[in-house]
Image (tube, rainbow, N blue to C red; front, top):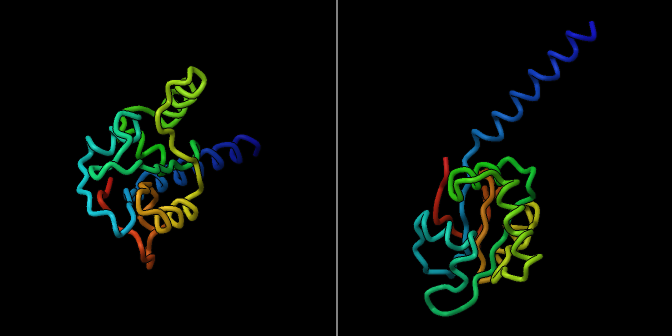
Length: 143
């Protein structure tokens, strides 16, 4: 009986994990931001290589928590690394005082609200998190 419960738990965990990975992730900016962004531009922002928009204003970037499925998907597909390794890289830059523009980590709902409030903001969330939201625009969809 114990073995059956363990197998059932593992099966549920796999299904939940796959559904989180299957959901689309969207990169969002404030609706007033006229910038066009490529995957390379977004990688540059989240790798601390690009810290200003074309008009010279500082970029305010937002990350999701490391255990969030959307962050893992974003990290794998845009940064080419795991969410955990990306977080370790940021932590190392902060410790060594080499971080130029570290992102703020917030939950999805707060990422959407922060990007809506700040013209210079960028973030990424699950597609479901922006349903019916105004004040933001999608600059990239990650499948």
